Image (cartoon, rainbow, N blue to C red; front, side, top):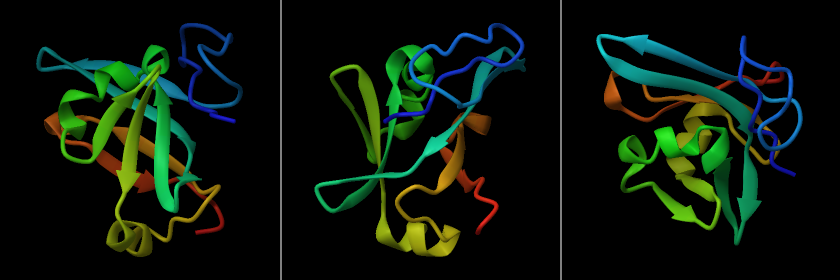
Length: 112
């Protein structure tokens, strides 16, 4: 189940799924988003599936080349080298943001 979805400071109701975090910030006129959720495996690849409604739509531009819109989700493929570097595996918790107009993924897993 996708866990991306709660907007911090705005609502305790999940936009799509339980127990995730989403934070919007305006900086230098840009809308930045930071959102957390799990790493999943689809067709042998590690991916992030972020509902467009929960913030994925704000990450489309900076995820070109590694992400694509599939139905109601932005699907970001995590390359093997990046997964190894960050210590990511199925079920890992990550934080994704668009700071400086770039897609940034970092581990948020206390086990890692």
